[in-house]
Image (cartoon, rainbow, N blue to C red; front, side, top):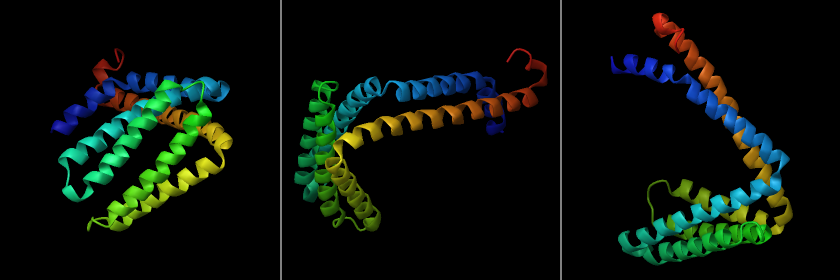
Length: 188
């Protein structure tokens, strides 16, 4: 019965999904219209993300299994350095950001590929993800200018898709709200 009572509560807040969707669609349109500002924001986001990834890899190197400590430490330090570069000059050196990201993906992919041999579970998946990182890193390094434009466009498409999805979900939740609580439909 708890799921029946939760659906109307979620459905009553359908407008939050609508607001999120509208904001995401507007942000996606702005990301297409103003790719330079988008790339600056993405550069800062990537820098912060790499800092967190690096910190987590270093924690895993300290507390994790002994056979992968050195590799985790290397990836962690590399991620921290890449994150610092991204945060230090996100707008002035977007090309450097792409090159750092490409190198990071290649080195992290190679390290993760080597680490995958120590895992019995999901070895093929881990190897596949590592190879994907290596390929993406190589593509980014071979076409850095195209990588910048592609990054901005992919980010914009992601925002637009998420926005449309949220708007559709909002109207579906609104319908559930109107059908679940007919006495309060006018106040929702």
